Image (cartoon, rainbow, N blue to C red; front, side, top):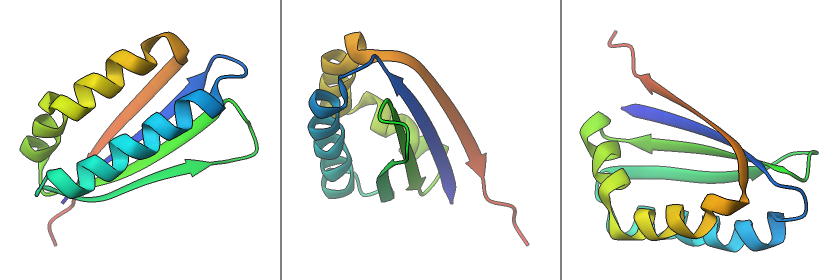
Length: 95
């Protein structure tokens, strides 16, 4: 298992434009990518923050996600909406 978290800080007032694009990207990732098992889009109290929690088979599956047509299209569409983006990647500890 390979987990990815992403915290987007949006430019003020753009959540309503950003969120439908993000939800579509998540749905396409789950539908079209066999290595993607979970893709949650989360909102908190700050209207300019969007948090993602994603689970993939492994880092190669995440790399495939980054190369997918739908991700590249999403990334281009939202580039001007993002003030900051923090990505963390985690590999499962084998017991």
